[in-house]
Length: 362
Image (cartoon, rainbow, N blue to C red; front, top):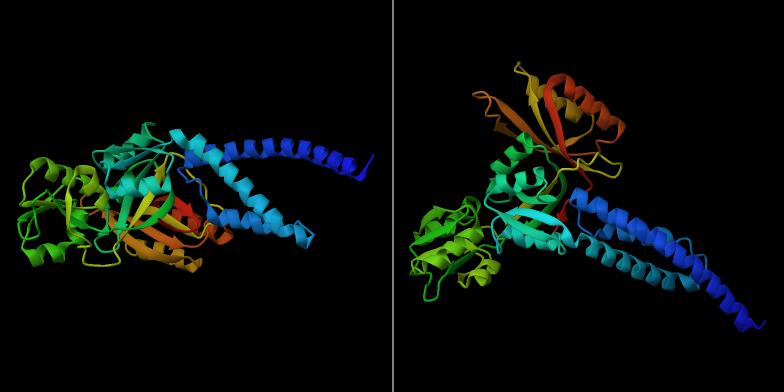
């Protein structure tokens, strides 16, 4: 046997074993895709990819081969993701509004392979997941200028879904009108209350009347249908394209750092994991002096930092409230388990709706 024949024999045997391992790896990729669909997670996970590459490249002892192996790994990861994208093609993502709404834009960025389905309001989109019509719902929870989206926080408290991911998206509001309209011809603007709040200074400066709509894109649609040069919508550029409107003026929100935090809600409850460093909980306290202070103290005493604490009416009793809390720390740790146990003793109810590693920008 020549040296070439011997080398080819080794390659053939190695390729046969690699083919077996490739199928095994793709089977695992299918499992990952199934998990991501159930938990409303995107295919791309760049931090996990870098961890995998750094870990696996260390197995190569020959420095000359290492860069080639990293390239091999990246190609393998790309193939795995391509397969997952195909499997997730039928994923159904609920959002509030119509095409061109900011939620629709963000949903397509997070789930490029999913089918995004618009609903009339937050409640309908949330319940679509509860009823099994959709795999997950993307809903806004807070805006950096205009504050909390109370209706969504209430859905989280009264509903059965959990949050699988939190995403930050820059929101640029624009004044949109029909052909022939101008900034000076506009008398009234229509948009979602959050958008109107984000552009309050601009609206006041121009002396416009304002009218609320269930969604920014719905507002754009109604302006297009009205065909009135005195009427404008505050919405995205995508909404302008979708409904054939003109952008009369861009970036009209008063704060240049206008960001909305969106949450992905799913039926699957994700248990706190070792790598998690953020959490969102909802709790009610006993109707006794110092109950809220005691609950907050319990959280702090175990080394957890509260980033936000907000109260909302329970609607069951007059002047009765539940509390929405966002914190930093790992609930899967010994201190985390201990803290939750102590909280259960001083609270009427404690509901963990999210435990995650970090927030993502889209």
